[in-house]
Amino acid sequence: MTTAERPPRSQASFALRELWGALGDGLRALMRGIRRVTARPVAALARATEAVTALGWIVIGAAVVSYVFAFGFGWAEFAFIAIALSAAMLAACAFLFGRATYRVTVELNPRRVTAGDRAMGSMAVQNTGEKTVLPTRMELPVGEGLAEFIVPRLAAGADDENLFAIPTQRRALIVAGPAISVRGDQLGLLRRTTRWTDQVELFVHPKTARIAATARGLVRDLEGQTTKAITDSDLAFHALRSYEPGDDIRNVHWRSSARTGQLMVRQYQETRRSQLLLMMSADRRHYASDEEFELAVSSLASIGVEVISEESELDVIWEEAKLRERTPMTLLDDTCRIQPVDSRYETLREFARIAGARLADPSLVIAVVGSIASNRELHGLSSLYPGDTPVIIVRTAVDAEPGLRKVGNAVVATVTRLPELAGLLQRAGR
Image (cartoon, rainbow, N blue to C red; front, side):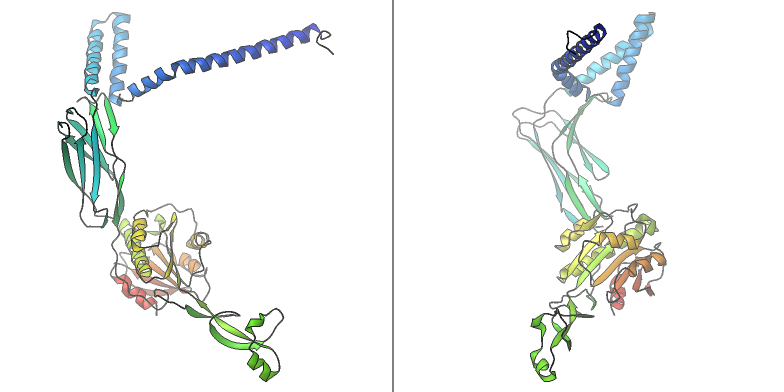
């Protein structure tokens, strides 16, 4: 049916739809035009209102309410209140004027310390402009604290330096910065901040103990260690056997074949290069106290540093990440980031299985856990690995007795103080 033959009702509906579509397009075009026109004023208003603090908004709201009562109901008392509040806001605006021309430098010395050592920081402020800068308040977040400094009036080219101490009693990754200059009134109605620096990291490493290498993996080995597994290609000769279809012809021992009259091929004992898997469960449900958790981190770091120093192969993991093991320093840096977590793994075995799935097969496993980890979980962890893979579990328990015991295929070393770790590992390695 053509348009001319269309019934009147259909023609009216078609016309309404066309009109509605045209109105919609017009409204959308109008909104886009309004947004383009108002974008800059709105952005400028947003920047201006950023300086208003929570107390400032309360004062503005109280002033508006007071004006409503003053002019709406003729109450002169509210007029005085409105005028006083408005005057306070106007006076506060005067403290925002002025432009600082600073160069701010934040330095930490040293950048890496051991828990308990002293660390200092400095913040240097220089006026790089050609005019004198009025006194300014500087704020510098340091870890969970906030350091405040008053920078005096600085002439062109003048500078000012402030020193501060950093608490390093506990292992942590302390972030200093950014340094922020603050302009505002004494009442706290308005506050304008300017960021001058980036964040600077201070690594507070855990305390570590010197560990003597043991014969079960914490040693440097160039040719590997033989195992009971038999393979057709390796270094350590084991025995001869009859040839079977599919055997590599290069493994045929021709002299024995000529003497016996049948083809004989060599068998070898499989050799493995030491590959240590060092893991720590940071699940907070396994630890009785923060002190116990810190002992676990120190144990992990002590073992890892020794293995890296001996140039053995190493993988270090915890629930959230795999630690860098290129050098002792990178490992210690990463241990600063270990924190108690609510683990997404139901058991230690599941954690070890999933987290270690993409890693090389270990020749030695050392797991660090807390005192609340049950024997059932420790047994499940030890059963994950073959019988020829030694498993040592370092169990930190501040209020227990140090010692060794067997749980499944694992040797459990209970450590109550860090100096005990070396001797217990030495005994466990036997």
